[in-house]
Image 1 (cartoon, rainbow, N blue to C red):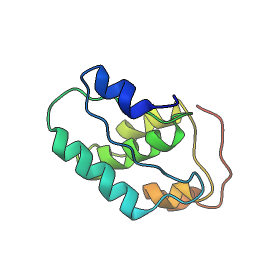
Image 2 (image 1 turned 120 degrees about the vertical axis):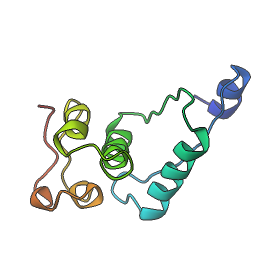
Image 3 (image 1 turned 30 degrees about the vertical axis):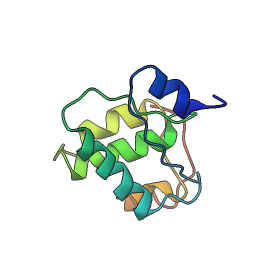
Length: 106
């Protein structure tokens, strides 16, 4: 959207933009993501990115680290979108897949 902030806020929703360079997710971006979710509390949210890969990885990590989900539970939603390779496995804590390329959904 050309002016996503205005469009979303005009609809009565809050808006938090966390730009993430696809091949360089950072701990600072993840900390901002966690902070935004904490600020929202129990209110309904919609989190998105253009292809949903970045947000799937961020949500996977958040569910595991902050919500205490076991490893299999947060994997299912992410792996329905993609099985990350490259820098992403390390970002989400999957050291076994760090040398693998991105793979199609399972």
